[in-house]
Amino acid sequence: PQAFMDEMLSFLKGVGLPTTLAQLGVTEADRDDISAMVRKVCTKPNLVYNMPCEITPEILEKAIYEADRLGR
Image (cartoon, rainbow, N blue to C red):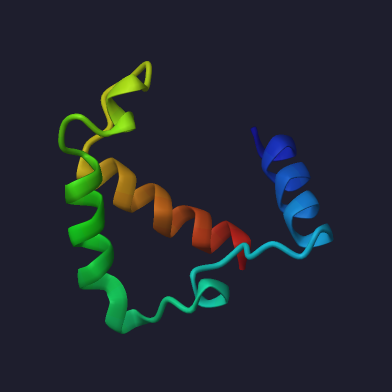
């Protein structure tokens, strides 16, 4: 829900944690690295398999960029 996202972003910003990829030092040039990372994370035996739903590399990569968008 949007209210939850707003609360989380407010908290993260309030304690000085990054809310965007840029604040983590990630640039457009790192997109290939992000793609490679999500493919690796989505292989067994990583913790992604403990999620209550299927997490694919495509879903995870989309979530990363959506979180970045919301953080901006």
